[in-house]
Length: 629
Image (cartoon, rainbow, N blue to C red; front, top):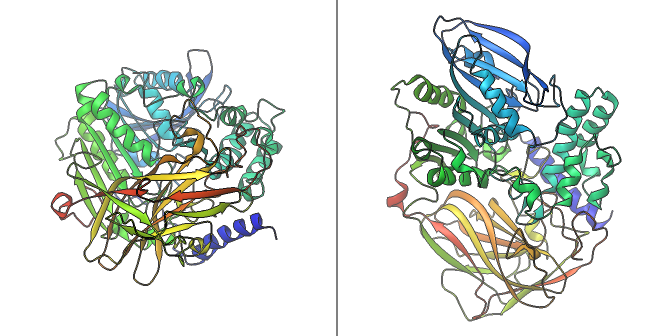
């Protein structure tokens, strides 16, 4: 077995061993608990004409009431009949309609029963506008529309909202981003391999082929996506065989993605983050500490608070962040990695109950106690309690550097790497390791997409990964009192490489007294993007550069006796595509070279991780149930 396959095998074993420990509760979602008083009727395949003549189709659920009521709209590429009910996420459209709302679930262009040609993001701004305005005129509608849904179905909301349709009065996006370049397709210059390839194969390209009537291709794409590990090592990405580059109908958006590895005009056409001034509605958003789009959710919350298109929008922003993965929302029958499942009911998502309460408040004017915002409800792991803040990062956070040090052998958890609050001149000035792209460090959990059973996300013991010599491990002494780390983390890393380009990765870990090393969050930087995501600048081999690695946010209470740990390496596979170290363009790179990496931590190059420490007086006592008002 090659070293590359060995790394992949190790990654698979980590997932399979965790899978065997998963609880075997029988599926029971959705239940009828919490239904409203209205009886509901349903019409399927209702046509909606877009401005260019394309006909999209929706299922419409209408409550039996004499009063005119608001409309709740979902625009999905995952099938309007499914309506994102499984795996254990939303209640059924009928359930929402029973609360006396018209509910419309629409297949987006080129998917499901809808006409037109699918291309991700491209048509969702205009089609979203047209659909919102159509929904407002449905029989029995009062002219107000709200939107809901998760992941890409969150993207359809934000894109529609940036078109400012007059009838849109609120959006309720879950697990979705602010930028379809950074934090979606790429992360600080690194290609998000484990998300993009399986997602496009198994879901959007497969379902688009079915929409075109090509069932054979649809089945082939789905099968390749289900067994994506066979294809993940394939390079060059510009010639990726399963998506049939020779046929522009299949997945041109994939090849456009790899052809645009920098933030440029291609990506700017789909932006959310630069158009908050066009969004004039309140937002209730949900995300998770291990979700692939967490950073985007935080950016959307902050962007709307400062730049939203109306005073109402700037004020009425609320974000819920739980200990969740992309589609693992904590319920007993949900697909949740075992350590997160073990947290128990306190971590269950309140998305359905809060959605109804939010809509009743915003659209029907009910004084029902819903807290408008700005407000963030966040779950602190380690403590396993919920807290409330008015901002994120939280006002009163103290940013404390912890310095890397060693006697020159920080390689693996068996090495001598240290993490201290005071910089020490003692010991070695640097640590070295060799990064081999053909034998990358396997991902063990993280913030990828879309399910922990098929991709690197969630909480796992990092001990097997930390035994590798190409992982530098820096660990604090046992803590004498609890430390609350809540917020975004920055690693200031002074490093050199003998390669033309390379990556550096960082991972924050909570080490228990029994040795379990649990990942909290991670980050990566591609060397050429250290200064700008729009204008990459080559590095000079052998030169020391300062890299700022953004480890994504977390909230974790390190208990007394635990240790804080930072892992540094150059790969995290398959979460990110391994950098071949050759300096070639992403789509064209084929083959790779090893890189000798040096991490400096002397008086001139004080490498550190800056932790957001939350004093107990700021965090407050918290509460031990999912958010409710």
